[in-house]
Amino acid sequence: MRRLRYLLPGRLLPCALLLLAFLCAGAYLAIRIPQALAPMAIGERLFSLGTALFVAVRAPAERRVPRLLLLLLLPWSGAVICLFLRAPKPFERADAPPEGGMFGAIASLAGKDGAAGHARDVHFFRTGGEMRASLLRDLSEAKREILLIYYIVARGAFFDGVLSLLEQKARAGVRVRLFYDDFGCAATLPRNFARTLRKRGIEAAVFRPLKPLPLSELNRRDHRKLTLIDGEIAYLGGINLSDEYIGKLIRFGHWKDTAVRVTGAPVARLAGKEAPSGGSVPCVLFSDRAENRERAGEEIFLRLLASAEREVLITTPYLVPTERLLAALGSAARAGVSVRIMIPHIPDKKSVFVLTRSYARELEKAGVCVREYTAGFLHSKVFVADGEHAVVGSYNLDGRSLGLQAENAAYFGGGSPAREIAEDFAALWETGSPVKKAGGAEKIAAFLLRLVAPLL
Image 1: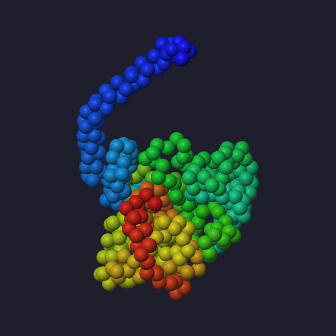
Image 2: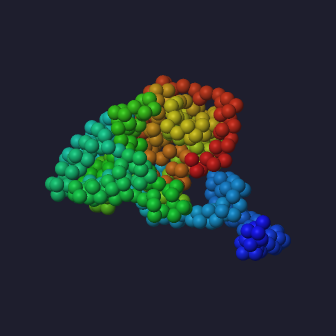
Image 3: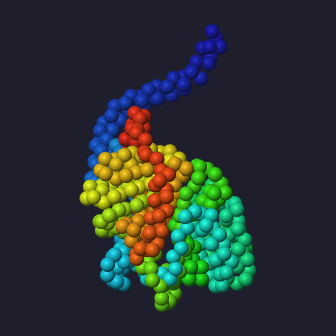
């Protein structure tokens, strides 16, 4: 007891005073915080409301629901994120179309990034293996310059063969450039791969690196597939420099893909060179930059749909169309045009596959016929109207390709390439299977996924 009385003034008294101070501070905060929270809550809601009105007025129709949902779930931070999503730059139209008719209209829609003219030769590849053999042959004969732009590059039989030729050509004095997307190659190439290529004489760079990009730019990838050789030969389509595209790596059953080889005036113009005379196939090589607000791809597809009189044939791995394209597909079918679409049967991304089937069923109600490529994964991206007009390129029929990513494609008029592509489609169609009816769980998943469809 004596020791306890000795310790009480020296040790317990300061602790008691400290506890009393905490209690007083707690009582003060308990009174003041609710008084401060009310104006803060009002300010937060006014800020979120103002942002919601801005989104409702300025955001494209297909992106309003995801952003408003973000505001609903995260009123304060969601509003900040929405305000940091910068508006893309306006699209630059071409000064004047080279000719009238559909060719001239497509050339005008392609804008200043397009290259129009009459191609001397067009070769359509029904598989990645066919395209690979031709590409390696042309690369081995390159004399001045080689440019490659690809979304995915992966070490393996395909790219290693290409890389060996690129190194040989670089040593021989040919200018060789290779650009690839950072996100597309994040899991397939080492981080310092571009530096390694530069040491081997190849001018290499990463498109849209992940780390320095602001939040608003992370979703704008470079999805193009393009090879330019000597300003005379162009390869483009859906095929990346990876083994699954040529059937050497089996991931989702048989991988069906397509590409085209083009020579002549449009290729020279795309390379910034003087266009040669000759050529008989009306051709427009066009692309969309990720920064553009108005984009050529969707406008060209809409023009082809509006002009079709007999049939429209489409292959796409992802069918998540914008509101405009969805309405145009349904309108064409209701007007008596035979609209047929092929989609994959085996998915590579299950969430997008659920959405693809959901939109396929909706389009079927409007009269569109949809079948699935039963043998595996359909990555081909073609669009044919009336057997006379065709587009082959990197565009998927989804909001990401049509509104966010950099894409490229080739339009062909005059019939010959379009008829060959239509024949390939007919062979696919005969082996396809109907889209299955959705179960209860799939209907719920599709409903929820549609709320964020533009982000997938």
